[in-house]
Length: 379
Ligand SMILES: Cc1ncc(COP(=O)(O)O)c(C=O)c1O
Image (cartoon, rainbow, N blue to C red; front, side):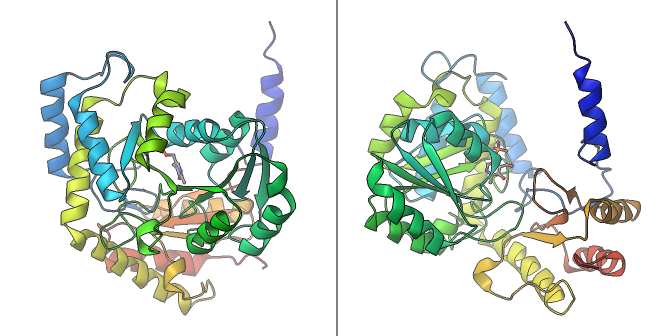
């Protein structure tokens, strides 16, 4: 056996600044790298719901949903997700990654076409690969390019699936879902939207970007329970017929242990809070507009367009060392503001994410450090 190639590859990763490692964020740090958008992950009510579920059902769910793993809690969560998403039914997974990676190959196969935004999340990309379908990427958010791909290719394939994040995790911008669903109607395609960063954050009821943009077409919505919902797990919501089909055809749901009772109960409680406490969302959006205003008067200007805002703000840096150095300076000032670099993204950046728990003075603090130490992209 030989693993000597690993030494060589580790060296290459190190030289390219691509080597990753984990770090513990001290409790006293200001955190601008969390996806806990509504601050629910530490909410007492979620903790109590999780503890009660452990006491009633135990820690593990002991099997897959189709064998020994199904609990009434799962049904309750699926009903709540379906209601939140204004869809007929839903299915919960052990993670959002598994949901996306499993649903794509359940919907399309070898004779089919996938048209995917070039910045889609890794789990959608993996789902595309697993499906065996022909995959063509359209330029980020570019519906003219999407339409020209539909025109050229749609008639050659049986089924066609258009695949997009609703909120892009590394750029923070929003997919033009209205235009995408209209194109899908015109070209007899399906649409699957990953609302991982949209759920709980957008829309009057916190349903997501689909609600905010008033999309009423029969799309497939996928998401995670681990960001604004503050728990762990993933979901797909759609028509009763689609969900019935997915229950029999999605290998990442069929062949894996059901979501734990604690995670399931915490997610149920979180959805109750999301629908009854809009003030959390209002605090988050106050913070989003506060940072957007700071950006609009700086050299890091971002076009002021309400629809393009989200809790995610990328600050693109000159190069990888500049991003790492800026993240380090923030760290030295007790602020976590992560550097994201290739191959995760095409260009290095600091990715700031805001939550309902931040105060404007927290944002002032990170802003002051970034503004003072920032080296622009083309300096
Ligand atoms: C856009 C997007 N989709 C899916 C996922 C995966 O979700 P989960 O963390 O539940 O596996 C993520 C998580 O980082 C994400 O950003």
